[in-house]
Length: 114
Ligand code: 5GP
Ligand code: ZN
Image 1 (cartoon, rainbow, N blue to C red):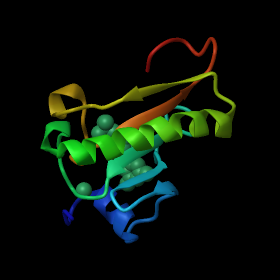
Image 2: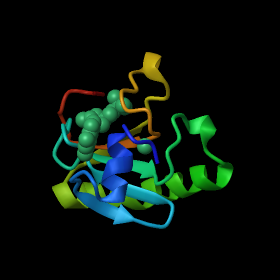
Image 3: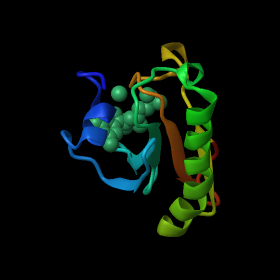
């Protein structure tokens, strides 16, 4: 756990978060500033900054959660598709230094990639 990390705080129950999926290794919760209704973040429970900081097992757990959640998120908000993305490093737009996959619901005619 990293003291200043909001995602560690959500996982620890110290910061409010709308958790939608939780395992021993991975947690998913709604984004506080969603790009679309249902925008969900999937994070490893342990604090790691970048994708390549994860063990292969933990990376697999994150991907398994994404695999499971993309249809669930689409169904929850009646979306047509999802964009799944990682900003991996600050130059790529990563603002929270705790690995997170975005699951962003997409709708026909919503104007292209975010
Ligand atoms: P990044 O730019 O790092 O890929 O995305 C960070 C995401 O985390 C943003 O979409 C932002 O809205 C979300 N976010 C930042 N702080 C919090 C927080 O405290 N709680 C939740 N649920 N989402 C957050
Ligand atoms: Zn963290």
